[in-house]
Structures are given as structure tokens and as C-alpha cells.
Length: 393
Image (cartoon, rainbow, N blue to C red; front, side, top):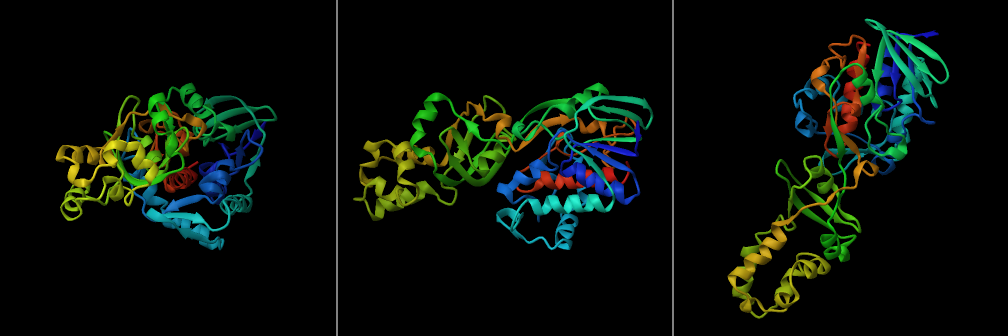
């Protein structure tokens, strides 16, 4: 039986951050993971360049059944703290739109930072390790049986992530641990994920694959302005991924494909000044020809502006600036960047991430019922929650 102070299950962004902070306090830490490499999801994130945080972070960038829970952790380990760590390692990075920060070179720079810091504090990282059983012996005493060795610890941290991207080893392990200790788990679903379409819509839009349009996308609860991307499977792009976290099955989403235009005013003005030009001549200047040909009937496109009634102008405006569609569903966990739902935050301390009814048991990162927007917010939650737990385990 190996006796240690802290066992962290999951060599994830949050798990490694927690290990670093606990190690700085002189705690004897073991990180256990079933994968063959630490930080697999870090390596593939951001197209291989890791969108490690955002210049602008607040609780508004997260969704949870307890929307205030994130405030404490985000205020105690901020985006500026992770930026300072990145700069201390002289990792080159750059800003993209909406304050997103990416590595110039590779996500491996971030993983190497974490592993180097773990090495400094003598964290023991055990990979290819299967957890067979967890047993609570007494307050702050846990026994963890693995396929290699058995451990005894005072603090047990679950940093095993959610269900997104199963090919990277995602599993429901963390939720099962919560349920073992009678901790509520909110139903999970795929978040930050492309939409699939019903057969008839998919056929109608099939010719648009590869077209990206800056749009305002709106659901019942939220609105985002970024690119949408037509794919051979359905709809993707940043705005679609964002809205997917606020979408429920059966709901429609509405899109304004010309968010900078008052299209009705443009049409009426052009009808007065250039009554002989055809509708398609005007619309092809505003949006890709392929898209216009799908959204507007050919006989209308061939009419001159003076031949088109006010009612028909309104129909054109509705088609392009209030386009509604009901997705068939999402692509699911296979391509989802995050998992919605998870371990109930009301069961945890927002200061320490410790279970209020189960002393010595902690949950951090994506396994919790906290989901950030696209743009570095989920990594920031990993850093913040891991750092907070690391001060107390």
C-alpha cells in the first residue's frame, strides 16, 4: 500500500495545475491516468496551438445550473496568472479575434510548462493506469485500487474530464465517482458542437458546403455573432458551436446572414436609383452566389427591382436576415469540444472545490457542471479550479 497525501485522477489541464499547486505546498502527490500520455486534450486543442485563455474573462462566459459558482475561482486565479506562467517560460503567443490567446508554435509548449512545473515539485505521474476501486475509509482517508498498485491518500481529486472526444479517452468515470458518493450529477450532453440537419434541409443546403458567413445566430436564450460554416453534414463554425451550448432539441435557431445591412432599405433605395437592375445583381454583391441561388427562387432573382413588389422584398429580407431552421440534432460527443452538465456545483465549495458532504473529495475541471464559451474559457476554468483545489488538498 502506497501512502501519499494527494491522489489526482486525470493528467488533464486542471489535474496538472492542481498537482503543481499541491506540490508547492509540500504535499506528496500522485497523478493517475489511463491514457498513455499526459495532457492529450491539451495537445490537440486549438488546432494544435492551444487557446489557453482569453484577455476578457467573466462569469458571463460560462453556463451552469449555478451561474455564480465560477466567480470565486476566476477571481483568485485569473487569466493574467496563466499568462504570467506562459511568459515566464518565454512561450510565444498571439491574440486572435475576441481576445483569444493561442501559442505561436504548438500546444506542446503549454503541456511542457505543466510537466516541468510538476517535475519541480516531484509530482509522480502514473500513466496507463486503470482505477479498479475507490473506497472511503474515514474522513480525509481514501483507498484507491489500480491494476498496478494500491494507494492510500488524504485528499482525492477527480480531474477526469467529461465525455467529449471519446477517441481521446473520454469516459463517464468522474460522474460514476460522484454517484458512488451520492453527489448529484446533472444530465450531460455535447456542447460547442456542430449541428446536423433533417434530410430535406441537408439536401437543400448540400451545394453550400465550405461557405463561411459572418452572421448573428440566435436561440431562445442567447445570441452570438461570428462565422457560420455550411458543411456536408450540417452547420458548424464558431457561432454555431457557441449557440449549441444554449440549444435544446426541437428548438429553431435564427440567423441574420447580413448583420451589417438594413437589407430592406438597401433594396428600396436601389429600386429608386437603379430600377432596371436585376435582384441577383444586387444580392450577388452581398453574399456568395451559391448561397443566394439556394435561398432565393430563380424567377425572383431574374426580375428587375422595379418588377418586384414590397411583399417580395420583405420575403427576401426574411430569407437572408431572419433565416430559421430546426436542427435535427448535434454531431454528439465525437466532435464536441466540451460536455454540458456534470457534477452539481451546489455540492461543492466554490473556494476549494471540495465536496461539502464528503470531506477530502474534490472535483475540478470539465467533470463539473460548468461549461465555458469557445475562446479559451474552458482552459481558464481548468487552471482556476485546479489552482483553487491545489491550495487545500
